[in-house]
Image (tube, rainbow, N blue to C red; front, side, top):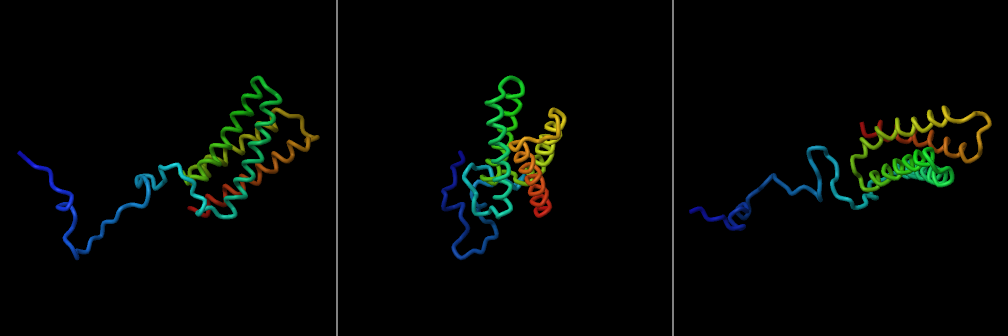
Length: 150
């Protein structure tokens, strides 16, 4: 019958030089991304915060419109709000940031295209102008972050 080895038997001899180290925190090395949900604010740069602010502005406007409009369009606005909120959350916890940047560009660009397709422009109401400016800024920030991490 085999007996399990004691924990002391699994450790290298005293004074031995080892090259293996324990990975920091909960890290999934296959994808090089964090798997825990703690905030990772220390790694955020001012550019990240500009992007988070732009996404928050756009998400807030979509939340307001979703509640105000209701129905099918209201649901679409609320889905957009959820997309912006999930993107912000993923960046704040450091979850696959590069992928978030990559997906955020067409998601935000699609918001602009759908807005143009469903609205009579000009004139552009002030709330919608702020939203579109925030979205253009967000696309620029996401592209810069994506390029920086390439």
